[in-house]
Image 1 (cartoon, rainbow, N blue to C red):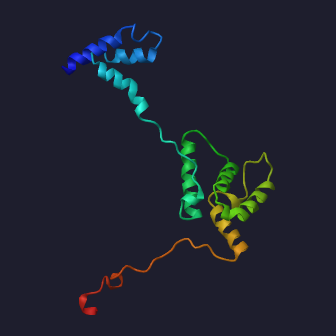
Image 2: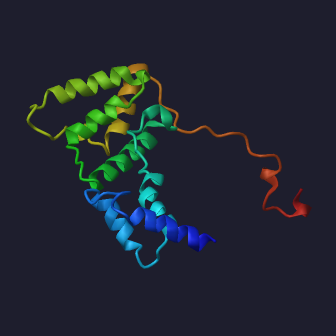
Image 3: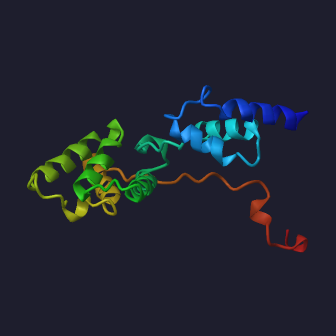
Length: 174
């Protein structure tokens, strides 16, 4: 019964009244399945590309990550993907993208970085060494420490789990 329906559907799709010759991509798909004589396969082949869409990668934001260093790593991964797709960013564009993604709590450091960027020629795509993507997280942290007088806490450690302190000892040592 399936093969009879598949054959009937193929015969209907194969007629130029159903799909005219000017729809070359659809006609090519129909012709690919001529030996199978299966209309269901033709329809699936036509619809399949619409079922799978490319994942859209968005620019990461600092507030999505644990700290500014992890944010820089995620931004670097994003830029690597963009580079593979043929979209290349200059060092100045990379720095501006990094600064744009920082939360408002970094506004003084961002202002200082932008002031430093303004000292370079607009035609020059390079940036000062402290503002390169590999160095800017440490630079921002240093500037924030200078501004507030407080170090940035990158990790929080909880108390050891109960019984953890006794691991590795034999029961006689307790």
